[in-house]
Image (cartoon, rainbow, N blue to C red; front, top):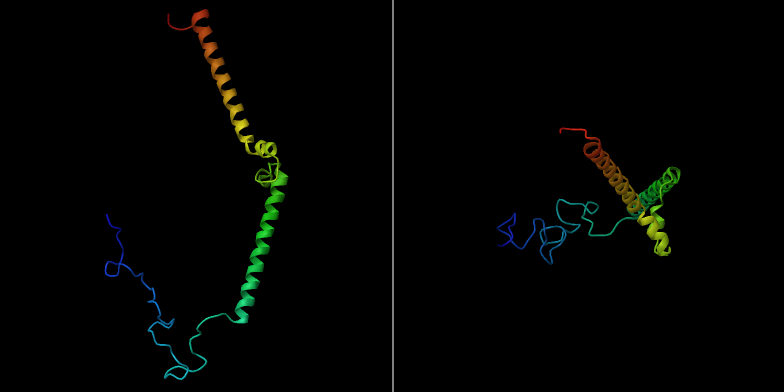
Length: 141
């Protein structure tokens, strides 16, 4: 079955897609600075960024990097205070395999311990019930 499209009249073109060789202005002809209705300063800019725009982009990027570093530092402090295992150590490729495995499989050891405790508790309850029913004679009978 063929893929359905939203625009059945134009199966190969996306809405807003330009034709190859078309000017960025839209109609194929480039507007000139002397064309009627436009002034030289209002002419369309064909590409590139001004130095002010580049400076503003660099400033925004620096702010974002600073925020990200502060967030990483805060997470590290919070992790150190809570005593949790550092995930960076477990993901460190240079750490020995035993160190990575001990950090990575700590949750498995906890889960196995909980399963063993639960199984022992259930077996103990079953043994007590068996003794009550078969040895002591508690229940219908």
